[in-house]
Length: 117
Image (cartoon, rainbow, N blue to C red; front, top):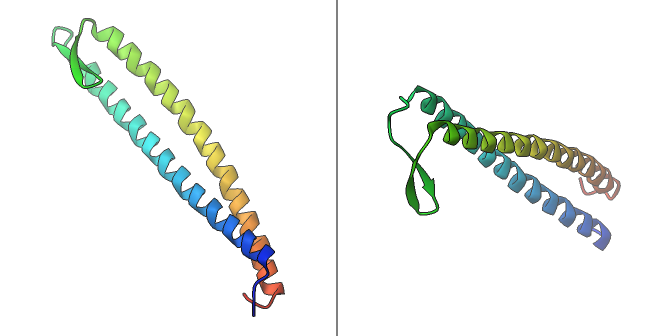
């Protein structure tokens, strides 16, 4: 049996949405990794003696940090920002997932109705 051009378009849209979802999930996972890495850095930094020289990566150079507390504050701000972005991405990812599921159900019905699935 032949699939109508409209149904072919819907299948293509569904496949595009699947690709978007996979890409989005990978981006969220990368941000979560950065978040966990930042948490680990902050934990290790809290155990470092105040007299220990610290360096921060700025672009392609390392710069000595004058105050440990200012570095901790900066890293905590980055952590908070990442946390908000991860939460936002999780919500968007959930909406995408629901849309995918809904679209998949509709496509299955249409394919069954056309005697294809």
